[in-house]
Amino acid sequence: MNDKPAGWYYVGDGTLRYRDDYGWTEYYMDTKDPRAQDWPPPQPKTMLQQLREDEAARTTAAPHRGSRVSTLFGRRRARH
Image (cartoon, rainbow, N blue to C red; front, side):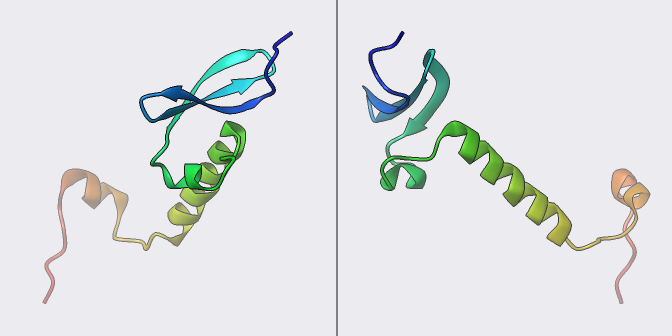
């Protein structure tokens, strides 16, 4: 069992690393990251979910710019 609780820890050179119940993870964050300004930063699982939600919102909000086939082949309609 680990002696430290799960959370973000400073590991040097302006870097935070996430430690879960099983040990160190592969998740790193720069201390200059805006998410690190509010201590403690969100868990990696929460950040990934927010990223997915933001991407989904951007995808649905993107305007339709013509047919996919013409985009693939680089053909565009002339604008008058």
